[in-house]
Picture (cartoon, rainbow, N blue to C red):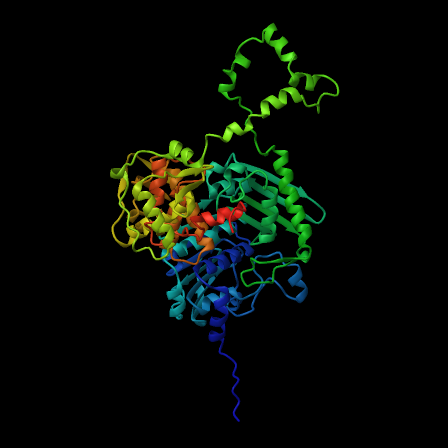
Length: 632
């Protein structure tokens, strides 16, 4: 029987390995930038074209490579970072696997120019699909320039899997920020399609954070610095007012390597537990310096998942460092001690306390119980019995029908009530819809707001309790769906257009969904340099701070992007529905509540909000009777 096991050719083996290391253009950006840092560069340039699909080029002024090294660096498992197994436990460089350049050369066309410091000429290498087409001397600057062109040209299925240019550019910017943030002492620049997005001069860590995340963070950062024999923790956390609904501005670095650790993130969240809302996430840029022997970074090809030999100790140190910094800078929950002006206008405060009033007060049983010995628990039966014997009078004239009729009934206003049809609502409970129709048709029962969060509406068999925010989310979600599928929404033009300055990552995000935003009523115009002109917003949104509205929309969108595996349009309309829905705590008029009820039961799926939360719960009279033990 013939042998069937064969050794794969190098180009095929490299393509298979590239599937783990180079998943998208951003993966190559990460590897090339880290190589430039390891080469000792002080000035690193990243050049992108067509979101990395056409070109990813990194130019550095590092040590450069010899003619032999320029050829060897594209071989699998060829590295200058480690020589023996012991070196694997003392890694201080960004790379060490020796797979990145081989993987890049397997799925793209690569051009390398490099010259060592002091050398007269450099070396030019051209590789296509792991095959070296050309290697010759060349004239080039000291350092290295490596260009990756036509990514996945030989793997069409992988290239088709790539997202839109704006989405891929977002990932590239994320990787660039992570490397640039971890080395503030180096100079970085990012140019995309001949437009410079970042130019980061060398400086302090705080200067780098402000340059990347925005000038508004300059006065909102709290320094963290704790030094121990085992590890050092330093960096910055944001003040409570910088907390957002997403985890975007959160960075952990271990020995200057960006990592993802839900365990350490939980430590920071615990430190902020009492000073920010439960659904918010604080900003932090924290660096941990620890002996490499206590860390295993050889866990995943991306090297962003690592293991500690004592995770509990790391958790305790990080949490303690953040708590200590917050306490040191007096960042604690604030209490409002301002006196209500209405209290100052009371007679007890504004008028003098006369001698007669003082005498009457000292004779009262309440005064005696607080001032005389052994009186604190005494009960005055004579006065108490007279006050309590008429307790039944509170309920004599307050039956439920009279109370509802006299307090919560308004005149019918059929001309202001939108026409609603419930015949084609298969997803809602049929009995609830029918009873809502009967009650709203005769307009006898008016809904009641409970704690400015829920709407209570009587139906024939009992009542329903509606979550006003979840219900409005469902209404807006289906309205935006119709706008994308049928006709664009109306736009309310602004009298004074606003300029919206965004971080590069958010600007790329807005650019990605600009067309859909315009369909949904936003009139946005790119103005260059990560700036947009806001000329109008959807007509059904109250006029206000357009900048804050769009910022909140971006946060909601990024939140859904992390949680959901749905397309960009779906993420956008869910984010808009969440951002523009009536929040809990808003007082609603009777007509507003009724409109929410009518529009909710006109939806194709009124039972749940877009995120899966129930919009209403129904209670039957039989259930209520059972609760009060009055039924069977």
